Image (cartoon, rainbow, N blue to C red; front, side, top):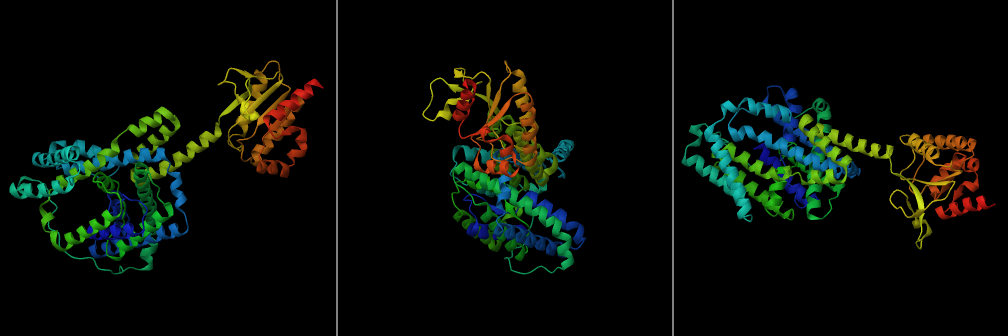
Length: 514
């Protein structure tokens, strides 16, 4: 019942405030498990206290998310890049799938990460219930057939009705097929949980973790389906909407909720294109609470698991991962790290691993940016600097004896300062005859930190001792300001800076002629 109460809050408040057209906000396995793990040690054996603390936790999660939204902290979602989402979705799909196998096969459920739950399934294969397997696989087959040949029909609803009818017709409970059991009908009522400030203090760390998990799962799902249907979601409004949904859930004795990937997949497959469908679903949930809860008492759990499995099967497609492997191996590696992070550390840990992997990939790319030696095209373009191209990619370019034109495609900071210096040294040592000048195309250098500044000063002196001039072209205004504050513009001299590559080349050639 508490799950249905939570669903009411999520469907209503997210439909009013959210920006995703497909996202279904309500109870989900990952958040529910983390909520239970947070509350259980504090609640002890008291069921009443457990429910109160669970509602309080939902209120706290809602307040944290709402405050973060009003503080415009939605940028946190920017760390969940597309490779992260690709790996996250596949990993989450696998976690949900293996988590449903115990109900589908009629064996004892397991706990832990993906591998621990999988091990539980394998070690309990001797205890598989034949009737349960028949019901579960039959339900799954029926859903897939309906989705394949008559996609406009509500496959999940048809399978639910068929499952209840089969359970009653064949007395499946007597054959060991687990059913949902009796559900007491009662409409939700608004009420504050009876708790103390000490309870708030003890739940705070768990509320922070739940907030991160709920937001990460929700924004990942929202962005995934938004990209699929070519529209944008507002990260800050998503925080506020999700926060309001959790506050509402806590006020009507529900528990923490978030955007459900499986239910969103089901809704998308059924053709949902706006949150009007969420309001329709809310009406159906309220009707269910008032009138239909006795009907679902006979629903086989295996049928319910089949519905969830069918919903997550689209998440297991590897086309996105194969595309990443083909285009960018680093992005593919980030996706795999996220995928296995979800499998090993579960959903929350997987998200943390994914964010760290994304930052690691960013540092890696900055640590080893693209560099190039430039030459001038023999058929100059209208813009003279466009004529200077990567000599390794364009064979028909003109080079200038004694001058090396070096392009560095990244800001210059502590992680790549030595790389910059080593690339210059390598060019000096590998160019014959030894160059008399190095012209750095600085158009892509947006910033230089103090480590980079010190490196440039040392490199300038090192090259000068060998009779080599260090020159710069296309230095941006903010970077020139940094050089000025560090005193390097005077140290290098005005003859070291040129507005274009062509003017730097011309100055070098004129110096040679003189």
